[in-house]
Amino acid sequence: MDTVIFEEFKSTGNAELKLDRSLAESRLFPAIDVTGSGTRHDETLVAPTELALMHQLRRALTGQDRKQSLQQLLEHLKATATNAEFLRRAARGLGHSGD
Image 1 (cartoon, rainbow, N blue to C red):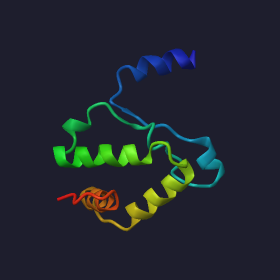
Image 2 (cartoon, helix red, strand yellow):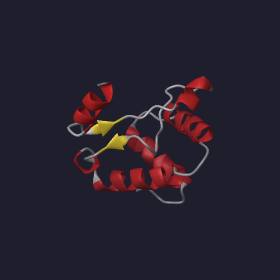
Image 3 (tube, one colour):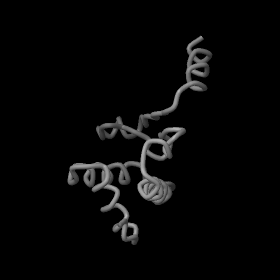
Image 4 (spheres, rainbow, N blue to C red):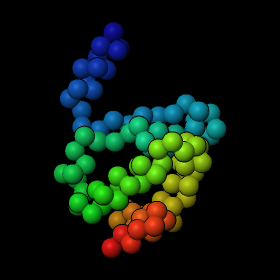
């Protein structure tokens, strides 16, 4: 029954947040599967330049070790005050100007 309810809500939701048990077992919180989580309408939430940087960051994280990727992501998030600043720093790390 829970699966039926989940599938019904899933089709109407805008965002999907996937958790990763292996990250939680490693005591890494929030234990989010970054590449598996997201929204359906990013383009309505952020500027086109930020959207492009988000896509580049997601591609860079795909296929990498989840634990190491999340640890690095959390370190960079803690070091920045805003999402825009985080994306600019991430872009520089990916070899793009970001401005």
